[in-house]
Length: 80
Image 1 (cartoon, one colour):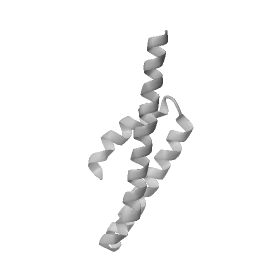
Image 2 (image 1 turned 90 degrees about the vertical axis):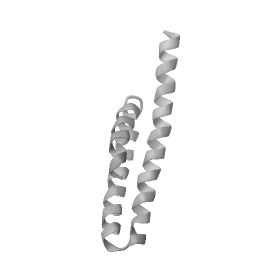
Image 3 (image 1 turned 90 degrees about the horizontal axis):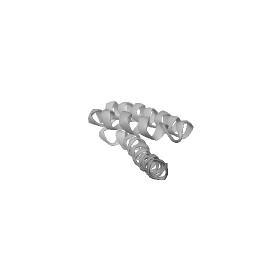
Image 4 (image 1 turned 60 degrees about the vertical axis):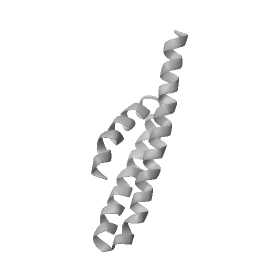
């Protein structure tokens, strides 16, 4: 999970250029998932599944939103 931090921050910054409020909420959801993952990890091996699902869902959302942001950035460059 720690190796995803660099990708997460990059995607958060990129997606935040086009939809800052939505990106902030995705970041909060990601942080919540990390906390649930850590608590579940200390309690039992299967307890971390919910946290991992939250983190993965936030990463997929950020990938999608970043792709949308890149699309609009490219459109802006081509049309200008």
